[in-house]
Image 1 (cartoon, helix red, strand yellow):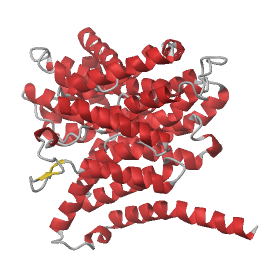
Image 2 (image 1 turned 135 degrees about the vertical axis):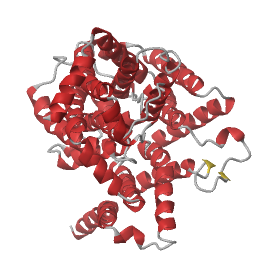
Image 3 (image 1 turned 120 degrees about the vertical axis):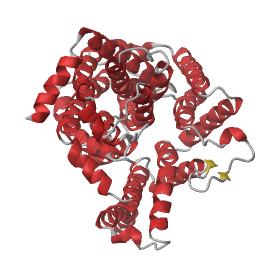
Image 4 (image 1 turned 180 degrees about the vertical axis):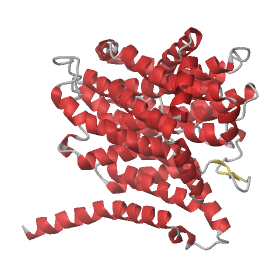
Length: 499
């Protein structure tokens, strides 16, 4: 009952007219910046921090949370329509959503993304409300070896799932892991693969890599195919709304995505990328239409998008209860707390209950606002596909370049963007999956840090990776997922030889 009372108190704070306006501004800004390649919610929150210095703390934090939720949804719009994720967590959505848009089903892809975001966001916010203490206790008990094993599962599932060849998927993954080594070693402070360039000491920015591979690479590929037998964009067929079959294939994926995204997002090393790719992999294995994956399966949009938004609420668990940010936007929100002299953690719930519960209650309101705002705009977003390709992709190049300059104004950064764009074109041309590269860059340094911490604690004994039941179980799952595609391929060749 205490939780219900606290939530009702928070709703009374969140429902104040001023705070409702802050929430509306947040979701509108978040959706807008999520749509623009290279400009994410973390950058937006950072830019607004000085502006909101003298505003009410509750209203500012509610607006920041709205930006976070809106950015998660906005990233799916361009991911679906033009294969350009506004956020790295929208990469899994792009895989099937873009194919649906090319086949004239972009409206249905956007609708399942919007409704899935609302369903999963609401479930995850309920989890944040009632299950935060238990999830935090679980996260604290996990050791570095367990986090390393969890990331190994993510590496293998991503590499084995994307593309027609597991070998190509693993090749792409190792390219990403190599890029992740650039910069200063987190434990020793020594520069690695910087080649004497000070701009590379901070490492490769994930936004530059993602925008280069997806946006620039896609634009170059489309330009190279003009005049050849190019893929034609079909106009929207039939109703803009989801059919009964679409609903039947989506609702289970929404639920599964929510229950995958929230607990992993709540882990200190979770984030949104792991659950979105795991959700995609699970939906592909459970689908009654596996042949549609790679050609526009609606489950491949519904599940990852639900996991994406559920993980957004999950990241607030360690932020609010431990003061531990697990994403770039959460780190910016932590800075927002600190500029008002607030320190997130267990004491915050006791010292500032109205602010904390007002923030949690505002997430329900922001979710509803996003659904009401975005569903009527589905038809408008789909009209982007009617824009002539030269104009559309010229605009993508401009926005991608502008986003990179705003995030980090540097000639080196623009050179990297161009190089990654060329790499994305080559990979697309020779059918190498792009997603494992970005996942390798995001999770590679984190996995390295967790592995080295585990080895340091065990004084160099590698058996520490299998003595923990959680770590041993996760590594076993990773090994099975890695070997299964090769075993199935060998079995298929053996049967073909017998026939």
